[in-house]
Amino acid sequence: MRALIAFLFAISLPALAVNDQTSLSEADGYTPISPSDITILKQAAPSFPKKAIKAGHTHEECVVQFFVDVRGKVEDTQIQMGCPEVFHKTVHKTARKWKFEPHIGGPDDAAVPVTFALRFTFKRD
Image (tube, rainbow, N blue to C red; front, side, top):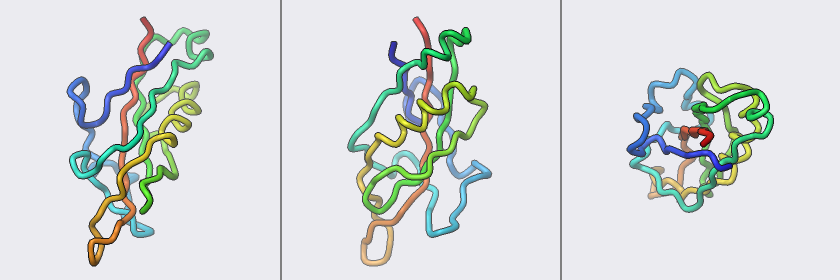
């Protein structure tokens, strides 16, 4: 069974303002970015974990924050909202499969690393 994905800028779920996340930091040169400023090249949908089914979960929302490096690769995934632990492995694994176009914003139009977040909605039929 596949989980539904709602990007932070999708119609089905309200946007989560990345700039409002207390854990976001510009340390190490990473800049928070809005969803309209990044281009998705590859995405993946998580599966509903079997352990979650056995535990009786039918609907959960998990927000994962991560860094997008200068190559557009996802790094350092972190669960941001009250997501049951049984979903964590799936969320981390799925987020790391995403690929983005490098964000241009540095001096001389160089790619810069940014922070970004996605909301995964798990829903059983």
